[in-house]
Amino acid sequence: MMDDTSAAGDTRRSGVTMLCARFRLVRGPFELDATFGCPDRGVTGLFGPSGSGKTTVLRCVAGLEDGADGFLRVGDDVWHDSEHDVFVPPHQRAVGYVFQEADLFSHLDVRANLRFAFSRARNRRIAWDDAIEWLGVGPLLARSPSRLSGGERQRVAITRALLSSPRLLLMDEPVSSLDEVNRGEILPYLQALPERLSIPILYVSHSLAEVGRLADHMVWLVDGRVKAAGPPSDVIGNLDFARWRHDDAGVVIDAVVRDHDMDGHLTRLDGPWGPVWVRHQPRQPGQRVRLQISASDVSLGLAPEPDTTIMNQFLVRVTDIGASGAGEVMVRLVSSVVPGPALLARITRRSQQRLGIHAGSIVYARVKSVALLE
Image: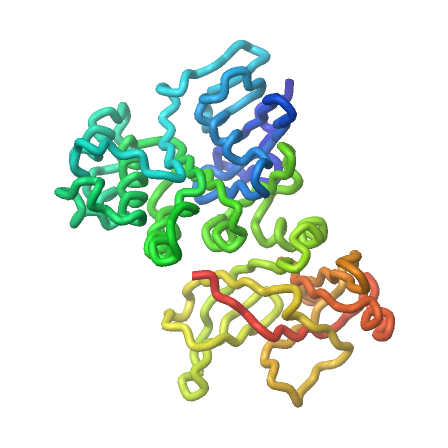
């Protein structure tokens, strides 16, 4: 059996407590064999295709999977250790669980649903007024669950999970059943939540845009195994991940608002490869934003191109080149000046050979389109 630090991977930081987990479980033809860790706060996105084991991992963490073999440490407490016959039952784990569908008591109004969870909390960590304010459910307290929209029901379900004062919040595709309008309503609440909580959040999704927007840490699962884990920029910028995503390959990176060009209706950001220009954003200088750049929107050249409508051109270094479909290659690029996240470009093999691009080449990346994840 592993020790309790080996599952933490690259999430371990001095003075910071981590969640460390390893689970093995066989259910018919499916076998879960996953080892991962996550930071003590913020969102860890569990991402992968349907059937990859994301929900099974959450159920193992919650103690709901009979027969799971493994190890789980949360903070300084061991909740599961098969080797030493340790298993903390689900009702003693102080876990808040939010499902795809909000399972509210239909015979109680919203206030009574929330009071039920609040009254059962053993160690009060989250105040009633705070949770109500964070999810904006104050105006809903007197309503019946039947009179709530899908987005409102999920906000109530998340509030209920918080009012149980969990040490760990598990969220299993909480917006997947919502339409676009309701999804757009609830995502800003979820995005703001990690700054208000000092607990880890494990967030399951098969939407890369969702994980890219919300997660600080990412675990990529395929066929019950962890393929990669780390900051979203590292996982998404990995060539194996890019090959798997194929046409949807790209990167997600953080940038900071620098200033605005009001005449040009533009905002300048400080990005990992230099200044990034985007359409004007009503944000204050110093505010962090998250960007998504598709590999198909990046072209490469050996020199800067001044006479072009493309505003974002970066001097970068090629680190890796891999096949990407018939006649195409995926090129991984990093800043030629300072360490940082990767940029991906999909180009034709002919262009690569014509320009002599290889690992170590210094090239200019021209980014045609940048999307803000908001």
